Image (tube, rainbow, N blue to C red; front, side, top):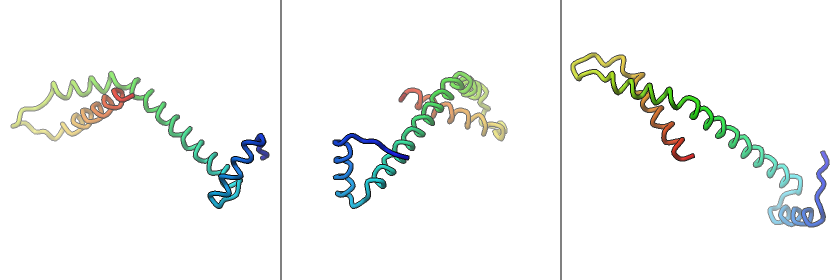
Amino acid sequence: MMLRLDEAQSEALRRCAEKEGRSMQEVVAAAVKEYLLRAADEETEQLAIEAVRRWKPLLDRLAQDSADDAAPASCDRSGLGKAHEADEIADVLRGFTASS
């Protein structure tokens, strides 16, 4: 691969590389790696936001249903684990959508 930089960019890159004790190629490779990681993080975040928007109504209903179906203290609560999980997931998703 060939990278074309203008004179000012090339000189700035040379100075940075020299200051860091690395080659220009190492500095460019690190910058590309950081860029790709950031792009992947942004894509993952966007997918998560889309999933939250898609599934939020269902999770809200599950949370509401589990609250409506809460058993009295004397009842067997062995089946409520999943309902509590749904509540926790819905709470997390509500917080995620509120912050985005």
